[in-house]
Image (cartoon, rainbow, N blue to C red; front, side, top):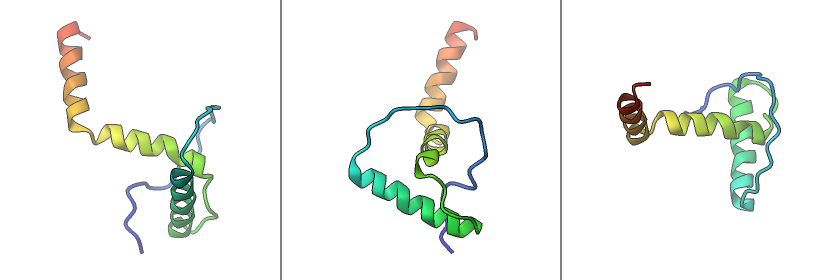
Length: 78
């Protein structure tokens, strides 16, 4: 069983986004969705639905961003 960084994708209200991806990245998203679906015992998720949780995970794990945002909020008193 693969240890993927993303867990199950929550069913959330969809938002339409237009985005161009390199073909190689799109193929990777399709493959990731297939593996994630297999791991969860479901059919493959729509690979486009992986983008948001991947970005959230990336941003959430970026310590430099977290520190910079916290410092900016501290300076503005937010």
